[in-house]
Amino acid sequence: MAQTQTQLHFRPTHLNESLVDLVDNGIIVVDNDLIIHHYNKWIEIQTHIKESAVIGQKITDLFSTINAKILKRKIKTTLLMQNATYYTANTSGYLIPIKINQIQNSKFEYMQQDVSIVPYDLEHNQVALIITDQTRMANTQALLEENILEVKKLNNALLKEKELTQKQYEQLLESSRNAAMGEMISMIAHQWRQPLSIINTSIGTIKVKQELNILDKESMDTTLQRIETTVLHLSETINDFRDYFKPNKKQTLVNLSSLLEKAANFLQTELENFGIQYTQEIDTDINILIYKNEFLQAILNILKNAIDAHEHKNLTNKFIQVSVNIKNKKLHLNILDNAGGIQADVLTKVFEPYFSTKSKNGTGLGLYMSQKIIQEHLKGSIQISSKDNKTLVTITLPIQEK
Amino acid sequence: MYSLTEDEKDVLQELMNVAYGSATAVVAEMLDAFATLSIPKIEVMSVNELLHQFESLKDKSYFFATQAFAGEFSGESAFFIDETSANNLAKHLEVDSNEDLDDAILELTNVLTATLTTKLAQEMQTQVSFSLPNISHIPLSEIADTNTFQNYSQVIVIDTQLLFEDQKINGEIFILTKDASIQWLKHKLNYILDQLI
Image 1 (cartoon, each protein chain N blue to C red):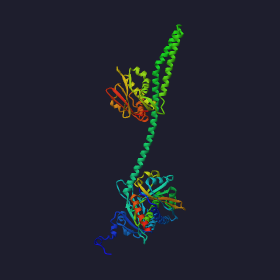
Image 2: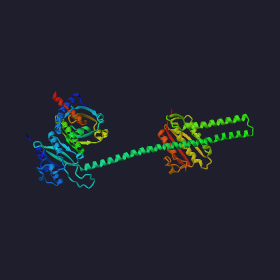
Image 3: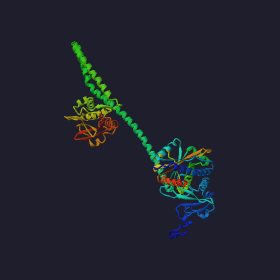
Image 4: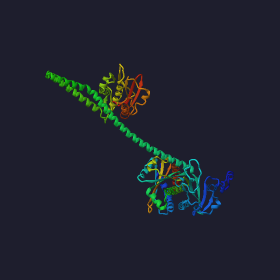
């Protein structure tokens, strides 16, 4: 067939052996008895062995580290299926031991090699071992694996840490419950002081009248009646507190105004003792679906802080004002006091656990727990700001009106 | 979405039967034992479905090797061999180190992939070239996270069981190919179909 002009000029070049010496790979031709038939320049240089010295020798005599059985199996398979078989650097490391003197990042003493065993001369059962230097890749891989191991270690440490934090949180919760209990007892004590003194006085009066023999039935009845009413009041106080300090399992529809009144009621004695004027401006129609007692506990913590801040202040118009506004389907409950405000450096820490400015009575858990309750149970948020000797706490809650 | 018609599936099945015949011979020769390969099941599925299929293998501990092949017909093979089988393979080949066992599993993967796909390619008048096989020691439960499989949206799965009854070795190989290769394959299969009529 006539060839075109182009084909004449661009005949496929017949590649000679010198090209084999130019490539950056080791090429060794062996037969199925492992006898070497070719040994290219690259491998000569790498092993410091001349081709003339190895032709006709068994490759396993030259390199005793080679497992003859495995290599023979691979050569047999290559010839049989007329397709390549392999050694991979990842799995086998290397076939031909070549010492390396790499300075940087060297994890390996010997060059890591991928080796392809390709059919070369089927008639003479010869294959070519084509060796590729994969040391750099293997180094990267080894570094990566080390790093992965490190990351896994760190991750485990982190998980343990998390577990520990969870435990600490539970302990904290326990302490805060105890603290709340303490608060409750102290509030009950405050509320009981007056009724107890009424009872005491009444009994005293009866005793005196009896001594003087002027105890008539009417004054006896009146006094007993008064004592009975007062005892009933004491018992109601206990029930009230008990009801409100049990955590709720279910959300209930609560009238916000009544709830705040209840809170103020619990603190009535202290408000009066320190001369604090409590006012609330809350629309009596606002009902919210909420974990009632948890919310009350959060509110009480905040009100208690305001009262405590007022305790030693010498002001004439001490006040705590509670108001509500609704914006963008969110309810904002504002609690404002004029007990002197909070310094900026303190303001950033008030939600941290165990942070307290109260010298000995503070557990440092009040606002921390209030924040936890509001964020985690009620899915809301709490902000605190201070300006002109006033402190404003704002609780924002999503509205689920019913 | 790519799918194969019943006729296309039939032709592919026929071609695979020829291919796995020669694969059986080579594997038997390599291991010097009597091997049987099950008749390949051919399915087109999404990667998610494939990973779901791998799920069923999870209750045993497996070695998992892959090998990519390139050309007009390109894709990847995935070979699974359970731990017991791998240990039996080690015993049979008298290899004593973990590295040599890994190497033997890779060789098995390579032999299966190369013979199956080379033969299949030959039948379709094309050639394929192979990358080095790669063995994974990742737990099978993490396979779904490996990137290898995320690249394949739609795959042709050729699923074959390898069994050496006497040596109690069995493994499963999946030949996976996708998008452009599926299109090419459909074209080729139809060409062969036309020749048959």
